[in-house]
Length: 120
Image 1 (tube, one colour):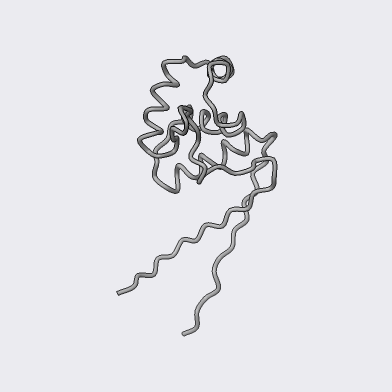
Image 2 (tube, rainbow, N blue to C red):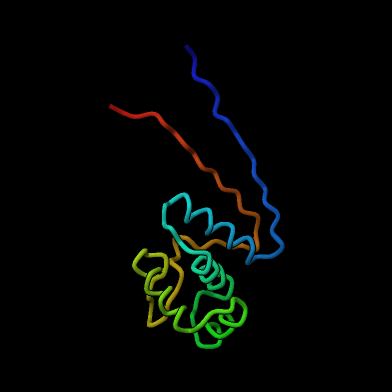
């Protein structure tokens, strides 16, 4: 019996801007990696990547205004996201882990392989 070719499915969600693309990407990454991130946490990650990663007071205030949040909520989310290694502290600044930062001004193509074969 021969090997069957893989099934290829193309999904191209329409995104209106870099933030929307970043939000969609981190939402997928959360689901695939079982991170159980909340919508607000995903908004924060996407916002930080688009704004340049730093959580300075003006950036926090802009986030709070845009997403109807509070500085305290951001603090709680930062603590949770640091525990999951999504955010890191680097030179006294909080940043999105560089391993998961993409250039959302470009077209992004993701390849996900789901394989149910087991090696014995």
